[in-house]
Length: 143
Image: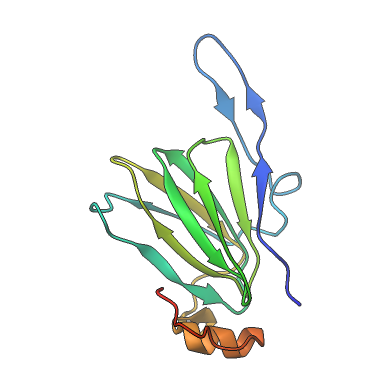
């Protein structure tokens, strides 16, 4: 069995001039960061992701706006609604993820444990299910 995703409550420093949150590799990030990227200007109704990784761990934060991350671990699907910049979603390898329902001006910030390597991506849900050791969904799966 592989590790399951979970939410991390990031530190919040409250100040009348504006609040501050942060993350540190040694405290909130359960892996060494090798890459960071962000997703923005997503047109209404579009989805991002719809893949899994063999090796890469990720941490996803909604820095602005909101979006949902639909995660399938091979046997169950869970929806994480990210709408506060002090929550981070930890996604270990072998979890299928789809980002959807982006609000206007949303900004998804992602840190990853690996540099980009196309060979780490699983882009077919059926291939993911086989790699995760789960039977195919009887009524199909919309990625």
